[in-house]
Image 1 (spheres, rainbow, N blue to C red):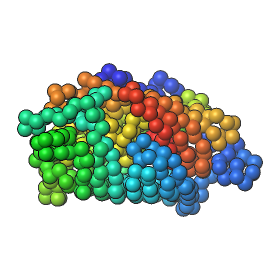
Image 2 (cartoon, rainbow, N blue to C red; image 1 turned 45 degrees about the horizontal axis):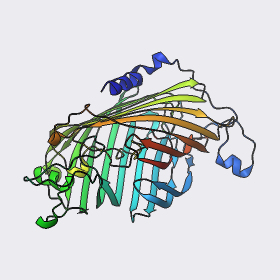
Image 3 (cartoon, helix red, strand yellow; image 1 turned 180 degrees about the vertical axis):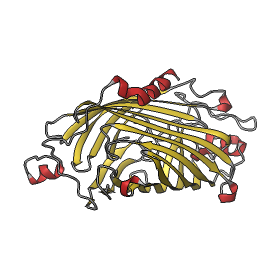
Image 4 (cartoon, helix red, strand yellow; image 1 turned 90 degrees about the horizontal axis):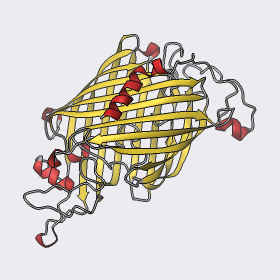
Length: 415
């Protein structure tokens, strides 16, 4: 817990520790377009209002949760008014097909209207997915808790699952004072056709999985379930750029209330926190970035696959070094620090090093939040895809202290 408190301190008060220089346009910047056309690098041009910038990237890569991936990714961006008082609007969309027979469609957006009066934020997904679960809490090999006096083998670790998943999150925020916003939204999590592959209820070969045990104890149907609710959010955002920030802060405090009236299987309330801090160490060449995520269930409960879990944030970026879904719990706190730096004078190439940590709980095993931590670390390469919007192609190699490792590909920064 001390590590999390230190990270939160750096996020909020980091500006006092590392003085920030004024944001200036990068000189002699170069992106992939300049490299392909062999044009000489030039000073960044002023971003045109209402012009659509449309980076398109074929997806050919690998991710621990997906295997080998092919598809296409889009990162359109547009400035709807002068950049002096309006943030860049951006969308990230992709369709992927994987070697693990997954078919994934993802659309996320941050739309800023003129003078940032309104922000429309969305996270829409349709996944035909497969992924192992590892039980609740932070363990090297998490125990599979008993159900009705029957206990499964505790040494297996991963428990493979397949499922379909629809996520629809949409929020409208209204500026109330300078960079402070308040808003309301809707959140839907629907899992169906859940196949718990190791589950065996035959008494001769009994295997009770974590998912099945949790679902029965908490009175959920193991094959499908829904968590629908309303969101109330307060956001502070003074980042200099929403695609790839060099300076500023983003704070998001949300309250989610799932209700059976809206189609949720159970009533529950959750407190959700996200904080990001960006600090320029050397004018547009080196930056420090800090990220904190918190998700606390205040009352009731949510289905197993809707519990707070590593790698299931808006852009699936948390937990580099661990497979998606490796750690899960009723409550979760995650923190990450990253050093970003240039590798070429033109700005075409850059690099990062990062360190992250997570803690979750498991009340069925008397494990409380903050009692056990997992750590991930690694480094990555950045290739500038669009100097106007600061969109980067990201390739990261990460490792976890549980021995896991992998390569992560993405558009735009991790956070």
